[in-house]
Image 1 (cartoon, rainbow, N blue to C red):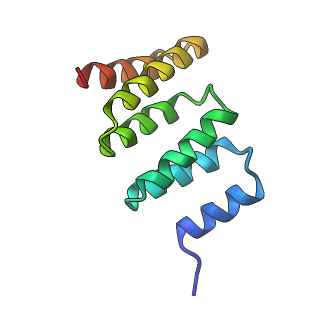
Image 2 (tube, rainbow, N blue to C red):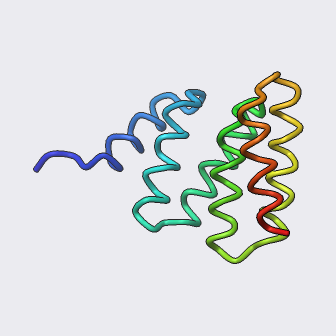
Length: 104
């Protein structure tokens, strides 16, 4: 039986845990499969190693929202805005600001 995308991504992350892109893809796949806690763990692991990965803040915030953890989502968006400003990524900054404003 062929490996699923999740199995492949888990294996790739195990082989190279420093690869931010692969860990991001794993987190996205977990979220899409409904494993929100697993996705959040991967986003947090990614951001611990690579705090400049701006879009991980956005998706981690969305995941926190889906989990009903609104205040933590706000904090994640704020951290992401700061990271996007440091990186000079205006697009990411605006997406994060929009998400933060939508929370009220």
